[in-house]
Every structure is written in structure tokens, then in C-alpha cells.
View 1 (cartoon, rainbow, N blue to C red):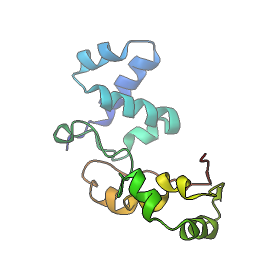
View 2: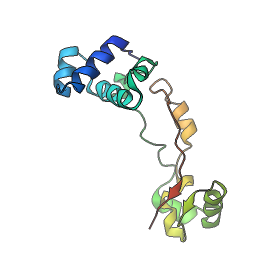
View 3: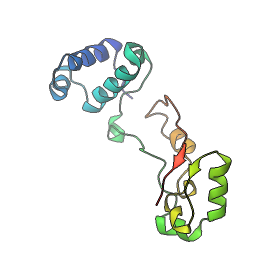
View 4: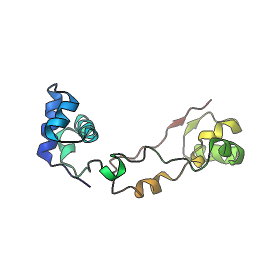
Length: 142
């Protein structure tokens, strides 16, 4: 996995902050578009210190990407047909997640219809560095 040095990250971010175009910066510095976007996000959310952390740059063998979610374990139709409405409601309630789940048809997007996100992230640890973990507060469906 490629790692960019701190000076290159700072230079690229400051070029963008001064108004230079993203594509022009990438051409001039020989960096990937996705790397620059990542660095800009880190910089804007955490300043220069965030760029000094050991954040991996996108990996060419993964098409410069990673999983964008856990991925479905079952189809929407299968989830509606097989998941237990009561169990899903109990699971949401036990975690303090606000929801309006009231019918079997609402189960197409239930958490149980998806793979375990902890396992998915563990399987791509060479592609990403986990910087935070989000937990749902509410489910809006219907």
C-alpha cells in the first residue's frame, strides 16, 4: 500500500486551499485524485495533524476504493419473507435506536439483512484505517 509523505500531503492541500484545481494538482504532483480528496477531508476535519497520522492512501489493486458499507447478506425480498418483525423491533429497542418499524415490509433494510460490519472492516484492514465508528440513532422507513 502506498504511503505519501507528510510534506507532499501538506503541499497538495495548501495548493487546493489557495484555489488551484484538483485535476491540475494531481497532474503536477503525480498523485491520485482519491488521495487528494481524502487528504482534503482529513485536513478540513482535523487540520495538519490529521495528515501526519498513518492514514493509508488508496490502493491501486482495490481500484482505489474500499467497501462503502457492510453489503447485503440477503435480498430485500428474502429479508421481508424471513426476518422476524418482533426480533428486529426488540433489537432496535434494546440498542435505544428510535424507529418506526411497524410492518414486515419495513424489514427490507433491517440490520439483519446485512453482513457484520466489524467483520467486513477487519477483512479490508490493509485498505483502510478506521478513524471512527458510527452508531445509528434512528431508523426512518416508510
